[in-house]
Length: 186
Length: 96
Image (tube, rainbow over all chains, first blue to last red; front, side):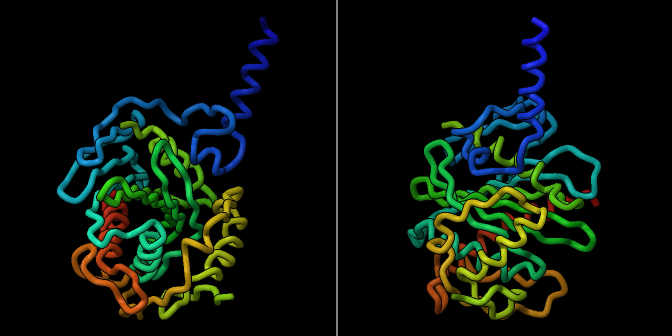
């Protein structure tokens, strides 16, 4: 009995601390089960996307005319947040063109931005392009991840941003993003 | 092989961007995040337009989504739409 408890504790401890984000964590379809960073609760419906998403307990949700907005309740200088936007795919762009447009646009818009990588992921039934970047506003260092997909005639972008004050600290915020992304449900 | 991005003004973005990014990934920011498949297909050689001389940011580019493409075939309107999402991230995130 005691031995089982020790083994379980070791497993959970290893799962919680091991590794920075990997593609396995991104997709959520492979690899070991990890403890959520915090508990999930609410599941807002993303109107127009026909999907719902699960939030963590300390996150709030609102919708304005431009986007679905999710934000962590915090007292730090910068609170992690996610902006989901639905856009008409009027030019019938493919994923490669979308990615190209995104990288070009943010590189033009933000002088201090550094795009760190672009990957492809399948999450649920949707194919995503994932772009990671970092930037800073004054002395506040930030990390960002944008996940782009095409659903029907719409382009959907999930834009996440969190603090990166200590080297590599954004990695932990990014895990939260992928937990939410992996919770998308039709 | 393309040159790495230097700043954002008149930069070439191609395979070079990934080479440079990859070094940064292993510099502590995204350690372990190393999937590279498909990058050369996704981010092809493109030329960016010259930025205005803003201290931190340049203005958004292009008009309504999907209406115009520049010389290099980039959908400027879609780009502007994307920028709005990242702009909102910044606006919402700061506790001023």
